[in-house]
Length: 93
Image (cartoon, rainbow, N blue to C red; front, top):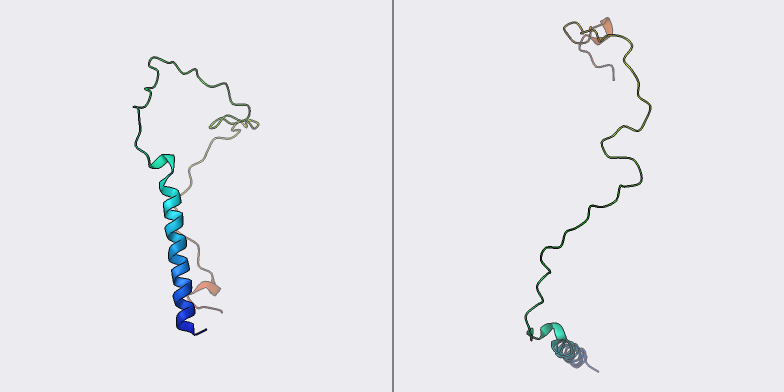
């Protein structure tokens, strides 16, 4: 069978398959218009709060609390790292 005829037959089969699938989906109930309006939601319903989550509370510390034993000292003005004789701007690599 020549490649042109084989290609034409496979193309026709593919197109007919797509047409059958499209026709099968058009009879779906979702494609139909609604027959009656939707039922409105009940008004005045109060939603109860959910129960307490079992587990760690977000934002709460559950580990041991440590107290500060020394006052915090302010640091001197930061001037940067001190240059040694090996750091004079030469790259050793």
